[in-house]
Image 1 (cartoon, chains in turn cyan, red):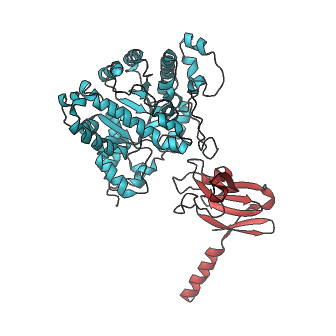
Image 2 (cartoon, chains in turn red, blue):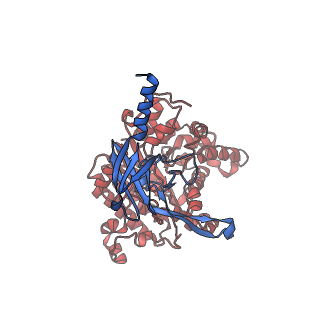
Length: 369
Length: 133
């Protein structure tokens, strides 16, 4: 399929907004911002991932980073973020955590909430207040929804805050449950979309138990991100969250692409004969689960499975209206990041306005930037 | 000049253009240097006394493939009753961006020969190492 537009190089794209640019923050970066009580509780020094990264039981991954075959950059300051952005030709970035993604499986609930608050202060202080090109979400620990809601109210108007982020892996119960409503209410009131981002190590803790039988990182990582999204998305839709919070939008990050049109059609198929399991959907403006998904959900582009299969990619993108619902992301500096060029190289058959939407136009609308 | 002779001379020139990239004693036993040549980065590898040269540009997403770890790789063979083994020590370089593994001697990706890093022929004369471009 040939490129139909005139945009051929990154410099010709209007604006490039990376909607998933990671920090590689360590516990020692965030710990200084902990409320005093929790600082005393932990009493830590050291430059490793610390208690925060000690998810029990440890998944014990041997990944290409462990074996030394991949060398990931360190990103723990506004300067290193900007360096990475400039190398990838990115204009603006939504920063996402690495360590922070393990919050849902942190056993000490109050400490998880304290770490979420500390991370938000760290981000505001060292990144958002330093660089106009950087944006972030308010990260929340889902096991502390009331505290999360209060924090969202507090920080929603701070410079650079454009969303809330719920780490989705291992969240129990899944995100459609009533206990999370305070978070949704706070986000809807504040006009903030919700980023959902999963993590392979957290996925190994709670869902599904069978996955604990996987003995290779390849197996875990192939499934963790999209499967956790499938669980949380199903839970959100079936519980009618979009009906109860009609202005709320979700951005599902780093899940890959092919599962999206599958879930749309799978839920529609199931719903036709199991209507009574999702009675709220009939009360909202749309008929079918797939419509709620298209209207309330956005997706980020990395990782592009099917890059070498143009027919697969163009069909998949078409089947969830990617020209309106997909936003470019790199996932830099993680080991499966996509270079910015990949979109131009592999998204054949899109015209200029669609390419510009995917690179930044849609992100501008979704995040109000 | 007869046009065909002109082309022949040109071809010979192109085939024979050599760049000096260093001398033997600049390399350890297993070693690699990345050199900048006419705006191209080329990785020159020494493996067990032999020299190889690859473009420092990964066919995946353009990463600095020649700067990766030089290792072997894990295998599992029927003859070993499928137990894990380690093979091809010092023959493999993994691109540091995403870990794609390439055979240094051929430039080929280990997963599929659909991908390869471009190779350059290496000529050693005495203690001088040249690549042909």
